[in-house]
Image (cartoon, rainbow, N blue to C red; front, side, top):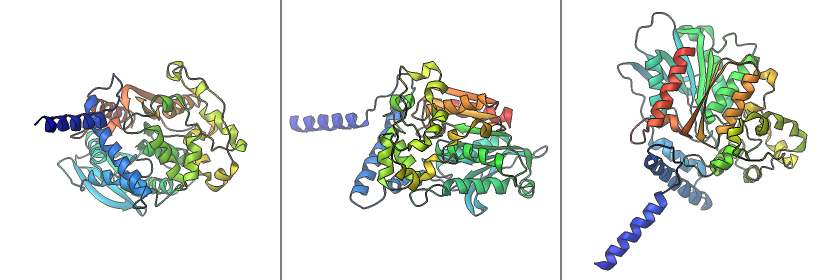
Length: 403
């Protein structure tokens, strides 16, 4: 009996040790975040093992979470939901049933997932789009762009841009009863990256006459030049999105060649001839003092030009919107940016907010001191958290007031 009890105690201790992750003190319901982190961490370990054994690509294993979270397109009393295609790209379409007094608003939404995982049909994204459509009485187009590793940059951008450009045509807007002066692009994480890039590109496209009313960027990933930002140091091992996983997402976006991932990990992937771009991501001038956390800025250590020549995507502002010059930012629509304190991508969003304001763009920067990456979609059971509901409410309130 004693031996069995001892074994049971040891087993419980090992399980508790595996589940435990250090969570910042100001994060509410930390145990929920720990459990979610355990699921992601376990899936990551399985993915690493499968890749080393040659059984599957790392990202293909992570995609199992998206598959498990997938829900069918189900209409309800407020919204008609269908899976269809626009401009040859898969989308989940949400159409409000409430009669409109006039033309309706529209949101083009791009999901997160590091350009490698995620799906518009995941429970969290389905809930977000459904809630947006119902509360704002808006048409929501949630885009299922193609993913790495099967498809690398610029395919993801081209998919979302193709849908956006198609939807903004007068005849298409008319077909869905959408007011051409009330269209927004939005996205979270990698989707926030795509939304920012789409908004920039639309400014330059002479074929598009409909202008965006707004853009909403939720903890966006905006640059891959410098991954030694204070937020990357501070949150290197935070649950949901660690620095190592973000490096993997960035590198996989461009190629499955591990040499790029190794160079990005050491922050030595940018060749000297592209050194002028660092002015656009210089956190020592773009972050407020309270976010520098005592870190000291050091200049870039340049890498070999061979990688940049082979995989130029990481120097392309369609992949890194923070690399746009000030002149290319002027004229962007009113912008909502959500950043979270406990997130490796925090500083990307803060720097973009600073640069947009300097370019004369109206910016609402919402910073969640108790937030973490992915928090806004922690709104469905069993992982729903108070912080998720609060951030979702603020995001929707901003859209209500600005769209």
